Image (cartoon, rainbow, N blue to C red; front, side, top):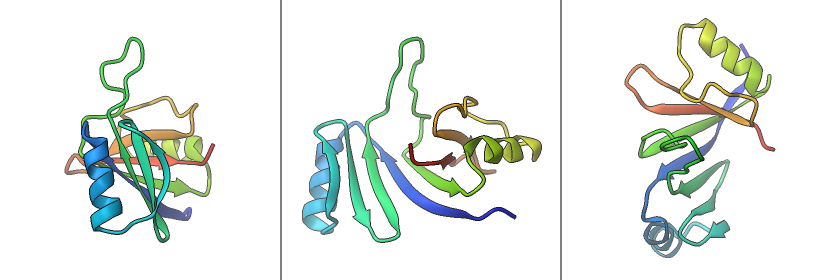
Length: 119
């Protein structure tokens, strides 16, 4: 079995700045990247916490799947191979284009998961 580690927990919200204030000022997580009103990344030890607005692309409604939380795993075999193994197991991909550095799918209860490799 390939090694897959939890790497990023995404909180998807339209209120990025309010969540940044909470996780930075109240929880005390250090901010590592911040694009005001769009996204923020925090150092949370071995796992990163990321806060993002839903992304849109021309021709797409919401590029980010409708979810409040997304978990990203880093597959050692690469995103393309990991996506193939998920599809082979009968799990449909939400964003079936693993040509980028990530792909989304759902667990049996509908939570959004993804495989991600750093660009």
